[in-house]
Amino acid sequence: MIIRVFYLTLEKIIDKQMNLPITEQMLREITEDLEMGATCYVDKNTGEVLSIPEGWDSFVDRKLWQDIIDKIDQNWDDYWVIRPMESWEAFEVMEDFVDSLEDSKVARRLTNSLQHRKPFQQFKRMIHESDLQKEWFAYKLKRYADYIRNTPDKGLPDES
Image 1 (tube, rainbow, N blue to C red):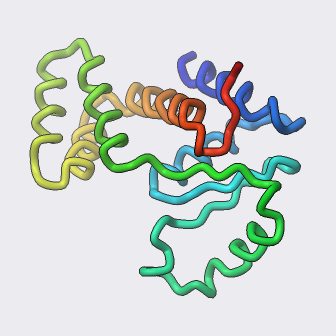
Image 2 (image 1 turned 180 degrees about the vertical axis):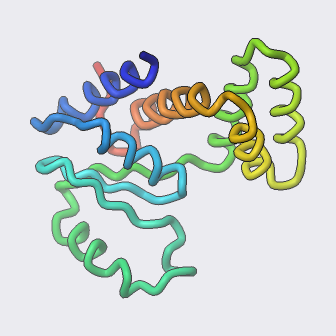
């Protein structure tokens, strides 16, 4: 139920500017790409999602992304640009999730994971070792929808 609410909410956001149905697959793709640090470009006319990793020019051969870069550059006004969360924003999502938990034992373990070296890796490991994968995934999807909707420079219109 929570996941479906996320999709309907984001569907309203995007659908105001493009007359296309927003699929769950499209929303998952945007969320996954953002979480991996990619910038997403959503074609307002077709709904196609193109993604380019942030900092790609330092680590990846530009030739691998050149077709996508050219396509975006040639039709820049046709795309909404959605940049990934800053690391402090993603960290805050994890902290807020921990704060939302009722099981204090699990919450303490997750809080502890956030206080160690490589907190993102530690948190992810703890989530996968627990029974919280579904809850975390639903929570994260909702927070990404909020992030996209409430950040004006991401290119997506708000719900009003």
